[in-house]
Structure formats: structure tokens, C-alpha cells
Amino acid sequence: MQFIAPVLNYAQLAPILIVLAGALIGVLIEAFAPRASRHNAQLFITVGSLVASFAALMRVRTQSSVDAAMGSVAFDGAGVLLQTSILILALLSVFLIADQENFTALPAAVPGSEEERQSLQLDLRVTEVFPLTLFAVAGMMLFPVATDLITLFVALEVLSLPLYLMAGLSRRRRLMSQESALKYFLLGAFSSAFFLFGAAYLYGYSGTITFSGIQASVVGGSGNDVFLLLGIAFISVGLLFKVGAVPFHAWSPDVYQGAPTAITGFMAAATKVAAFGAILRIFYVSFANAEWSWKPAFVVIAIITMVFGSVVAITQRDVKRMLAYSSIAHAGFLLAGVISLSKSGLNSTIFYLFAYGIATLGAFAVVTLIRDSAGEVTDLNRWSGLGKRSPLVASVFALFLLAFAGIPLTSGFIGKFSIFSAAYESGSTAILISGVLSSAIAAFFYIRVIVLMFFKDPVEDGTSVVIPSGLTTITIAVTSAVTLILGVFPAPLIDFIESYAFFIR
Image (cartoon, rainbow, N blue to C red; front, top):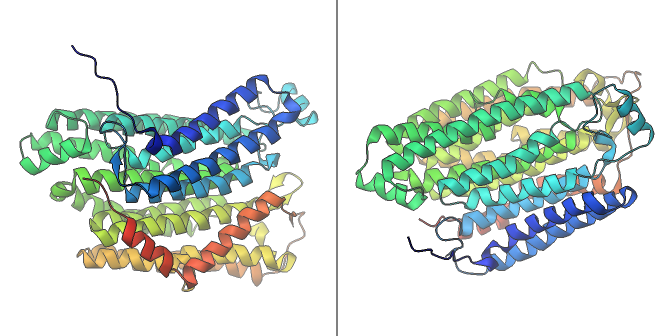
């Protein structure tokens, strides 16, 4: 057997490699730097890595589309747009993560133990969360540009494993946090097994693991259709788990509630962009000519996901669980763009992912500000009268809720209008009707929270609005401004996506 040296385009891979290098430097800082200086050093390395990666990505954008790693990674317009969204969301998330109030002092300590009490008294800071975040971001950046099944699986694991760890780092309600991390890990492991099982079937069908090779087999009809159907089904389980679509959603409410709020915001925003980026690529490239085999099932899943997420969210009394079921409903809306299987569907999905991610991150940033002596207050009943305690904070949170509801003059309205228009153009009338009705249901519980904040009297139970740190203020200010700007003046971004979003086939 002759050895063939790999041919890699390092200029194209630079954005991912820079983030990985930053993560490795962060590991070395954890090993050798004095504890007192770790936080500032880690924050500097993390922000610097993300900014440098963004600069490298802008250079990649100006180059022609190329195969960056021998058929395993391809940088095209859609991939670069998705990576840009991930980096922006990750940078804003890091500003939230830098507020160490959210994280336990000693993750390895047994909750309630003497060791944990001593660590709290010493005010120890968890700084390994920064390199973990960078590792997750690197996996997220690779996920939407991977063009073979092995690379896609590696990216899936690289982005998932750090999130499993970070979900269990909450400073308070430690047992709930650890339980959520364990649930996320176990269910994530099952979904990964399904993904690998599907990859094996697709290899058996086509004799190749590349997306283009699988597409050629689908077009040629040379393989066993049973293997194709099983492969698509099992691959879909692994991918739909990451976006929280029904019936693979069971982890979402518990993990959203138990994880540190900054990590929840990061997962809800950036992970969804990466996962839907991978879904778009594999279904638009590999399975576009086999839509007869997966489109009917995806229509049913999308409708159930939209309706289930919107209806169950009404019954929630915890703001983080409410946002979790809201994210489930939005996963159904986003599946409409995948089902459309058109250029307008691709454009609208990319816009919706960015707009939803920004609003979600901003909403969770506001949640970190509502506290009492025991920490964050997520019980909605205790948010009563928030508009009278802090009109500005309540108004910003109301803006994000209105964006989720799809009210005009917010980014959510533009996103929903564009993605439902794409569904209508593709003939998916059932998706359109279900989406509109689900949006109407969702608007009820969003507006209910707004009424609770502004038209109810505050309860004197120790709940207060803390003054945010400078970094948290930046996140809230940027996300609220972008949410409003994209609702009032979305044309530049929409036109840019229209001209730049495409996949290499």
C-alpha cells in the first residue's frame, strides 16, 4: 500500500486551528499559571482567539471556494456565514461566562461537602470553562463545513463533550446541575451511537463516506434503498437530538434549567447554528435527490415540534424551562427551511439562526441579573412587577420575548416571515398553517410574561435586579440592538446572505 501524504489548505483551516490553539494554550495556563492570574489570562486568550479566528475567516471569505482537506472539509458561502454566526455568538457568550458568579468553586467536590464549603470560603474561580468553551467552538465551526461522515462525527463529539462538562458547573443547585449534565451525556451518547449506525448504513449503500459520493449513489440509484432509508433515519436521530426536535427533545428542559445560565445561553444559541448548519449541508447536498424518503417524516416532525414546544411552554413556571420549550418550538420553525429544499429556504434558515441566536443569548443574559440572596431567581411568579423594579431590564427582556413571538419591528418577525414564505413557495402548506398557529399559541405565553412584569405589583420576597458587570452589559446591549436593527432594517443582511449563501456539491 502506498502512503499518500495529506494535502491541507491551512489558510482555509486557519479559523478553526486558531480556536484550537487558543484552547490548548488555555489548558497550559490551567496547568502552570498561578491561580490568582488564571482568570484574566484565560479571558484574554479566549477573546483573542475568537477575534483572531474571525479575522482569519474574513480572509477566507474573500477567496474562492476550495476543498480544504481532501474532501473532508469545504469552505463555501453557506459554511462561512454559519461559522461567522458561531464566532459572534461565542464571543458574546464568553462575556457572560466571564462573570464567575454562575460557576461552582470546585466542580469535583461532592455537593454540600466540607471541601466545597472551604472552596467557597476561599472564593476559588473555575477557569477551565474558558478552554472548554474554545474546544466546543472549534467543534461547532467544523460541524457545518464537514463534507464526510467521519469528519462530521468527530466535529459532533468535539462540540458535545465540553458541553456535557460545562452543564454540571452551576454554582448553586449543584445536584440539579450534575443531574442535567448526566442526562445530557447519556442521551448524547445514545444519539451519537445512532449517528454512527446511520453512517455505517450509508457507507454500505454508497461505498463512500463523502457527501458528494453519497449524492452520486442516490442519483445513480445503484445501492440498496433499504440501506439508504435506514442510514437517513439513524443519521437524522443524531442530528435532530442536537437541535432538540421532538421526539428527541427530552434533555432540553432539564439541561437548560440545571446548567449555569451563561452556558445555557451559549448552548441554545451557538449549538443550534452549528447543528442546523450540518443538517442543511447533508440534506441539501447528499439527500436532495432522495427527498421522497425523508421529507414526509420531516414534515411530521416539524409540525409536532412546533405545536408541542408552543403548547407545553404555556404550563411552565420556570423562565429557563419556558425558554427551553420555546427553543423546541423554534427548532420546528427552522426545520421548515430544511424541508423547503430551495435557495430561499437556505437563505431564510441562515438569517433565522443568527437572529434567533442573538435574541436567545440576550434573554439568558437578562436572566442572570434577577437574583436573591441564594442566587438567580428563575421562578416566573417572582418576576412579578419587574417593570416597576427595573423598567430598563424588563423592557429589554420584553423585546427578546416579542422577537421570539415574531412581532413586527423585531428580528423574529423577519425570520419567521422569510422561513414561512420559503415553506409556502416549496408547497409545504401544512408547515405554513402549523407554523402560524404555533406562533399564535407561543405569543400567548410570551405576552403573559410581559403582563406579569409590567402590570402586576412587585412582591417583596428579596428578589432584586443586580447591576450587571461591564462584559454582561456589552452582551445585553449588543443583542438588544441587533434584535431591533434586524427587525427595522434587515435588508443589508438579507441581501448579503442572498448573494453569498451556497453549498459546494
